Image 1 (spheres, one colour):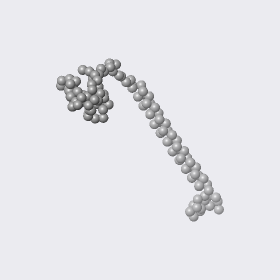
Image 2 (tube, one colour):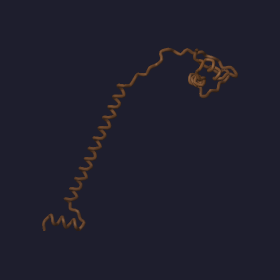
Image 3 (spheres, helix red, strand yellow):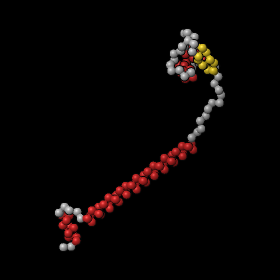
Image 4 (cartoon, helix red, strand yellow):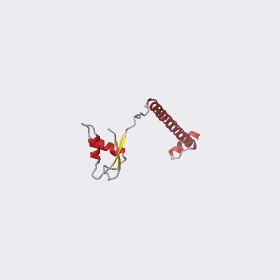
Length: 127
């Protein structure tokens, strides 16, 4: 019997030869290497795209601009019965929304709500 006949008979009997197993391991290693190589290429493309996008964003970004004029304010001491609405309506130009001025006063004074306490210091933009 020749070697190829023994291999053929072994396969028919459900047994794998050492040569077959070694060839199969090599195929598995090559497949993993191909997968790793493909994964590496994909990661390189993704990294290059991210770097290009970041570089482009840096080149086109506008620097922040700040208003050079200082806002002049008047400080008031809140009296009993005073409301933010009353302060806001006194400084809001005609035709504009008073509620926007109330929101501005809340932000300017770092208030958690629109409620005022007597004796509290309130900063109001000068007209």
